[in-house]
Length: 327
Image (tube, rainbow, N blue to C red; front, side, top):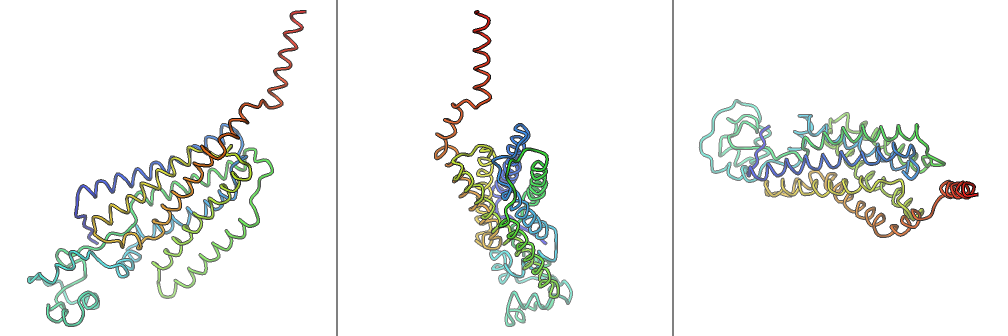
């Protein structure tokens, strides 16, 4: 399937933004992993967040991989969202067509309508991609989207592994989280059963895209609420948030660049999941940043200034030793 960029500059900028988003979003997992390792503890890291995050990234991986690698899903996407309108509009001004065989009449009728189909002798055309100059509208999933999803699933799974080997205090996965997770995967199973008979694979993977959108919103809420109730962000890596915010902005800009080049907004509503993912990420990361640097900064500083019991005991012991030496 041919895909055409109208601007080399925008194509290059698109790739740069995409791999920048991949890099910062991928690196955003490591501050929390390293913080857990240094502290040998996951206290302060909400466990519901991790479970929701694994469900979210698994769903997003299914969507990205299916749309990027499956010709069947891509064909259904093009049938629903169309082709490059600019080139398709020029099609009616072309007077010379090569003969590509006798197939593809249903496609040709779909594009042109019956009158134009007969006028241009469209029975001599082959498949849509065989028409000179006609290109498919770009699918809204880039290689960096697939690479990020794979990496995200692996790193989230590793962070969950840390929960089992490090101190977690009294923290545990809530019944609400378990219930939501079971319901989500139950919805996915039902969607598969519905899509299977008719081969509605685009609808199925879009359902997984919807899951990741909902889970993106849900996964942030427990951590934001936990920070609020504790009036502290201790145990929650701000480095993760700053990188995540940068990735969200770059991801949104990447969609904008593609839409500008194609002179169409179909890139946005054709992948509403990626659009909402970017907007949700930006919104919640701003909330976390405010919690860390504005709302609970004073609490953190005051806690740093107050010595704990062990530190106080060491000071008293050192003072006693100095007095004994003087005596």
